[in-house]
Length: 285
Image (cartoon, rainbow, N blue to C red):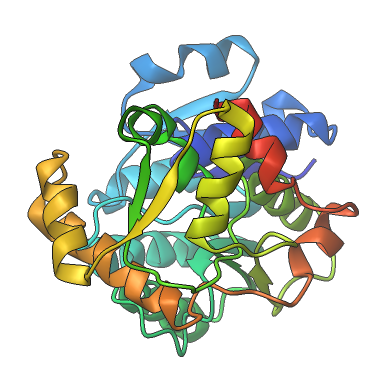
């Protein structure tokens, strides 16, 4: 049987990816969850998933985790600013383990994107190419949850804040992107492919605010700020300054079309339309 390891398995995307693998009929014993803290993965172990501990900073732990693994769903790390070295450690460990396929979660058009967040993804894609590992790139647009997770605050203040102007974002649900990852890592013929993944129907933040109004029955407006003012608002909401600046800068990229995807790759992988914005918002309200 083929053994599949999922990194970041207790994260939001990682858990959904494991759910999707099991739903596709992969035996739990053939799924390996790489986690930092086994105490947070008790539910995965109870389902029969093999739980292995390790971190991207510890090559020895990665070697142990990848032992006997055939395919790797490499979910990018969360420590922005440290991911080039960390991801290189994963790539090197995958080479040593002789992994037959790596599916890496990158960002839309990572090779040409103006987004600052794309830099580490670009470096990782280059590392994978240099490694000789059979690789498939899952270049994800924004998660819809980047917006819907803020619904309580948006309703409290009757406002969606941003700096995206009339830019359109092809946001997709984490569940859709996780399912596509499971399709790729369990299928054949994907090595060497680059998938630009986004929701079928792109939207502006003003349209998102209008949908939130419709679903909640409360008036919500989009307030378009300068990048600096939006970053300041995010800091005021409790985000670290560096992360706030990165998010605000990403909105400027959104304004320029950096997160617009019109390939249809996601719905083709899923074999169905992507989850509509109205459904995602209704779930969050």
